[in-house]
Length: 313
Image (cartoon, one colour):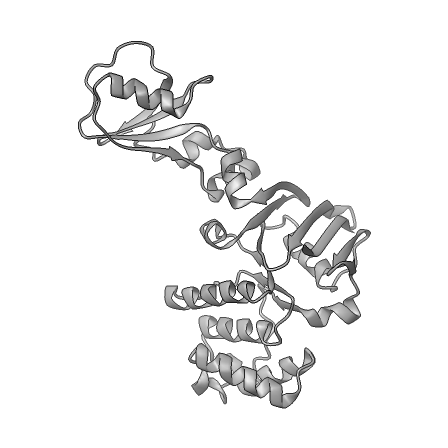
């Protein structure tokens, strides 16, 4: 069941089409990736979903009903890329203030804040000011204030920016736990490897339009090019007959091959076995989301993009 449905959304600024007829849905409890290059329309889209901007056309459904910014915004936690913390305010006071804005009573806010501060080892920060924090420390604080009120929808824009690997993993683990407890998460980033690891479903927007929509698994299979990596105990010397593949390149004790149209992976495997080749590995090579992103946005040929240069003949 969908928590969020975006239907034919449009937003124009003068003659610029910032969002041009975009539709998608986000299932409850899922981690949804919103991807696109700078200027693609992601931020405008998020600002309409959070009620900061009103769409020129189209509509947003939230939990099965037409989105009402006044009533529904309390159920949304938004962590923007441009941080919104008060630099001169003490951290503990700021966390309580932001929690109360989201409807929590002070006593309830205090309990939850202490739990999160212990979890993120932030207890000693209580009386510090935001301006005294490093970028990574302020990032952790912003994350805590975003999820503190347990919103139905959590929107995270570049949540790992400025974090070291240890704290990145800490927040990543909490994102998984929030989704498992029922929160729905929209994750916007330029880091494709993080999207590939974290997200269930993705959309890619470019120049205000949606150009890709699907699960991570389905998208990668959609753009596969029938490339296989074959590892040998010893490189084959002489191969006879008409092989069911085209050679793409070699590296060490490996062939990179592309299966010819009309043939299957089993045909390639059987061909080498019949030649007496000693195969130790046989794996399909799927493009990464980063490869697909660059292909769709920049038009770079996919095969030459995701293979190592030394492999390609």
